[in-house]
Amino acid sequence: MNLADVTLEELTVDPHAALAAARATGPITWLPALDGWVVTGRDAAVEVMRDTERFTVEDQRFTTGQILGPSMLSTDGPAHAHYRAPFTSWFSDRTELLRLTDWMTERARSLVADLEPHGRADLRSSMAAPLAAATVAHMLRLDPPGADALLQWYEEIVAGVHRLTAGLEVGESATHAHRDLSEAITAVSRSDPPALLVDAFRVLTTAEVVANAAVILFGGIETAEGATANAIWHLLTNPDALTAVRIDRSLVSTAVEESLRLEPAAASIDRYATTDAEFFGASIRAGDYVIVSLAGANRDPAVFADPDRFDLGRSNVRAHTTFAVGPHACLGIRLARAQAIVGIEAVLDGFDRIRLGDDAAGPLGLVFRKPGCLDTTWIPR
Ligand code: HEM
Image (spheres, rainbow, N blue to C red):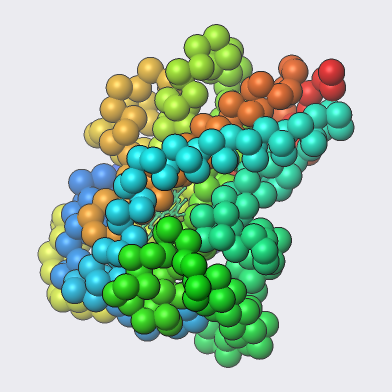
């Protein structure tokens, strides 16, 4: 495969052959379609993510930060630590996680119970997506305005990010969506802040709390939706694995992990080189755009044997890079894992004889990868 011929369309629909071809030329390779270096070797990916002095997120091209304002996602060094620190204790609190897992279990069961009589649904849009959105709304006590409002604001802000990336104005809808979101977070936080925000209000300004709460909200919707939907997709396209998981429920978490490895819900993250450097054989220049392909690193054959295979017996599956590593490692790792697990459990318990329907389409997306349509059928009871 000639890397100069790889298109954005190909990277969106099925990037894995192109990523393997890029890796065959070296762990970090110039990819014209992305106008940047793509990192597909796991060791190189980990080093880029850890080395925030040489590879930073702080760049004007990172348009999300321009709309939401500075946050843990758009800063490095002391500023990043300042924004991130007040949220870490809540995300690592076992009691909070158990409480939230119970809540998510109830929610997933109720979504499945509502769908069950119909015998058919797109489980991404009618189960994984509402579960993810309702969860973050619940965490931040934003119900009301509720998951639907959050999703609408999210879509408008994402559209604004795309406009900025294309060199256009951010647009009124995105500005209004950000204003409404800020007001909702500020209002809920003023008198009795949700537990997740209590520490943040002690050390950050209201604008900083809002920006970082927005990062948590938006970091936790599309990714968690994709993780649950991709895992269901992988089980329904691997009947032996589905049978194994039905017999031994302890394999659900293994299936989630292997699905996270094969199709990371966030397939890549962006960095910008701060200095000229020789890096894993590539001559990088200050200012170059560096795309860490988590999808590529997760199929590095030097680390994962037979990397394209969905394999429940993989002993090193947790070596995947799906949640990133280093200072920007995902805050919601435990929550995301728990959500995908309860989502699958609810589907296994709630539907008889599930299989993919004719309209099903597998994971796609340039950055956020999830099934185009998780059309699923079952026999109503
Ligand atoms: C399976 C689902 C998820 C995946 C695949 C995922 C993936 C990631 C990745 C790759 C990053 C690193 C971004 C970067 O360095 O540029 C990240 C950061 C982050 N994630 Fe997640 N995430 C998931 C779920 C969640 C959830 C449920 C939450 C919270 C509710 C969350 C909150 C965050 C936050 C706040 C950051 C920024 C951390 C920082 O910059 O210091 N994520 N996530």
